[in-house]
Length: 339
View (cartoon, rainbow, N blue to C red):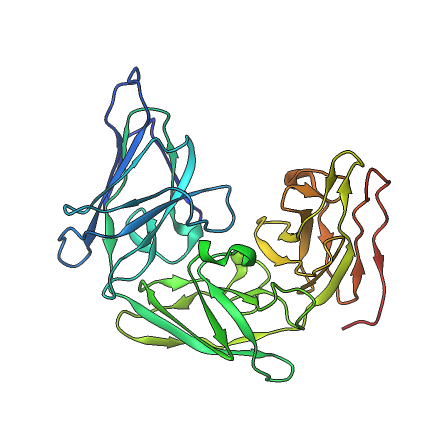
């Protein structure tokens, strides 16, 4: 399902609430966005629930950003949110209710089905009520597909930056994972192997069902009050490596190299080699990625993410060198045996 975009410029009636600017166009001062958090069954307001505003362009759910906690009346309020497009991730503060993305008519486990709003520069925007459903759990094994060997990995509700794993709800499993407190919806889970899909392991990051693309991921159906079994069999990744220095002699650019899916710009691997002038990542074949130093200085030659080269990943190891300090962009090269 495509995300639903609702603007502060128009009033839209929806089943779970309304999206309505309440201040005149000439109103001064920062904008306010508000919602009421309720128990879906009883309608009773629920305090102590954290609502996170996730910028639509952020392809991992950075929960260190804007957040609001529901008060005794269940009201959560954002004051002065930077104008832009947002969706909202909800984390209850109790064991009874499950997490959710705020949808147009209740919660969802699919970010693509979440409500997306245009935050105004001024005035008041009322979101649909957050309707909290009972929680369920997902559990399963984490193994290497080819050998059955146990794998240590982080399992998260969205693409995550493994160097900042606290910013996205996730659990860590060694051969087995258990993810509690999920709302009773279909969830697409992201599995990032230990070592950030770098040189310390064999397997690569994937979405549930073995997908390289969130849009093709298998939805795992969570049932309230029950445990769903969803084993994750991780495949061996193709090695992609190279020089990780860019910029100029006056302004060198170094840092971790991010491999981002070319279609969604979501993180698929991050280099974790101690030598910051080289990088190594493992990626599933059959996808196209963009490589960026620090997520901003991208191949080739410092392009921004939108204009970076989309590099196809096959089964043969691939060398992609950044140009060094002002040098020419090297050609891609494939070396080594097919996986």
